[in-house]
Image (cartoon, rainbow, N blue to C red):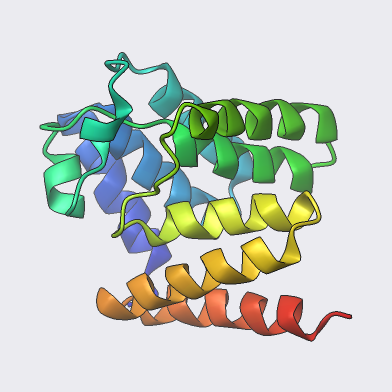
Length: 172
C-alpha cells in the first residue's frame, strides 16, 4: 500500500514481540526502502547472526506469515545480498563484495532459491547482480520481484521495481 513508515512500525513491534531472523529481515527491508541504511544494516546483521540450522532448504518459507511465525529455519542468503547492496551504495565496495561472496558461497552449496514469495529477496539479488555487471540476471530477478509484488498487491514496491527494471533495460 506504500505505507513504508507504517510497515516499519509494525515490523518494529513484531521484532519486540518475536525477535527472530525473519522479523529482523523484513524490518530491515522496510528501513532500506525508507532510506535508513544504517538501521537496515544493523537489522540485516541481526538477521544473519540469529542462530539457524545449516539445512537452508527447509528455511524457504512458502508464505511470509509462516516465515514470521518462527516455524522455519532462516536462510541468510537474501540478507547478504541486500546488506551488500547497501554497502555498495554507501561506497564500501569491499564490504559489499564480501557480502556478495557469502551469498554466492551459499548458492554454490546448491541453495540458490529466494523464497517464491520474497519480492525483497529477488530485488536485493537483482541489485547485486547489476552491481556485479550481470545486467541480464538483474532484469530476470527484477521481473520476478515485480510479479511477487503484484501478487501481494504491493503496488508502491511494484512501481519502484518496475521503474528500476525500465531504467536497467533501457541502458545500452
